Length: 72
Image (cartoon, rainbow, N blue to C red; front, side, top):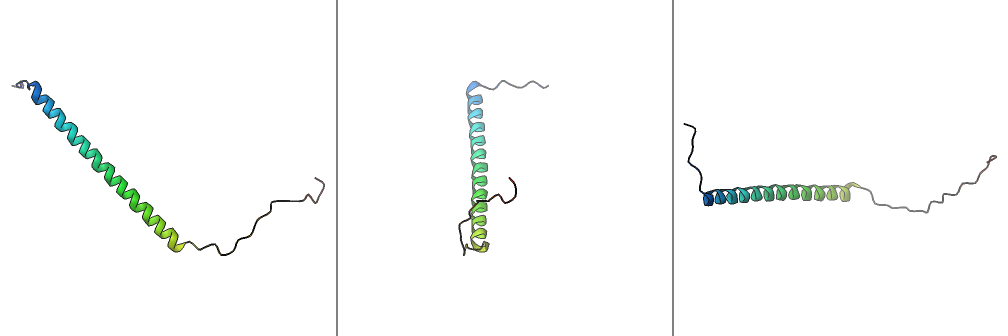
């Protein structure tokens, strides 16, 4: 009771390869879903920004020169 037959080496290698393949596919799937969500988020942000932000209609240079009026 509780004793199992040892797994032959080739079976252990095959199991390890299948497990690695499964993990690789899971990682690729998660990476693809995250990339898709980031792409959709960037597209929606760009669409919202382009649609609702006002265009710059007036532009003038700003001069940052201040003359000291009182005893500096």
